[in-house]
Length: 304
Image (cartoon, rainbow, N blue to C red; front, top):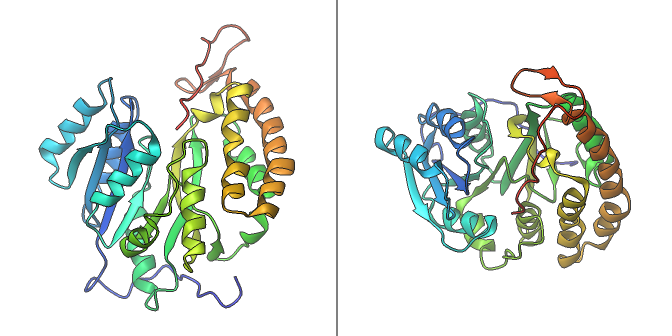
């Protein structure tokens, strides 16, 4: 955005640095939560607390979390009985005590410098120009992931706003890798939607913008994300992607509603069909390709 200060990757020092809380909603994530927390707890020099929100898990997720609680004082657990990501997210962000509140998914794999990058970014923002920050997510365990990601960015209705600069301003946030100032969360808390048929992260970003705040996108703040959504069948994927134009519509962003409904979602659906064919022939455990019919049938990702 013209006139926006760029981030040079440097920090003004340790003194007075903001504290960082990380919220991790969990619902039946026994396959991913351990690696997620292992990476977060390796950064407790910068991560002040990790708030795990148990959203009625019935598998071994919380047993794994309890192992981390036993040895890492920064990890604590709260419970949200109302089923749904938005309720778990809200409870976790309400409970967070840090000056900055990050929200990631239980399958997110943060990089070793993730927390340091976040803190340095906000330390450098001495005029508090930015209200929130998000970065990229790259799928792990799938073939041709980088190529699909590049095309996805090109056709995104907000893609033109993501110029090749260090920091750009965007109207939305990315839920697997986002951070808000805690006072900003409190300001928008009463206006975020609790609907489960919209993109909750896009909703938060739009609420920040409508409150007069600015959302920063930092390309270097990249995390790994699971490819589980990419393995969903076409009907499930189309239903999920219909959440995007609906989210823009409830915020009366009609140009973005039309752009996402008429261009982005159809194009991404076509890309998904090609990607799904490749994924169903690829074994992420061995890194090898399998003949058609030799791989077990994949289940659709649970909707948030």
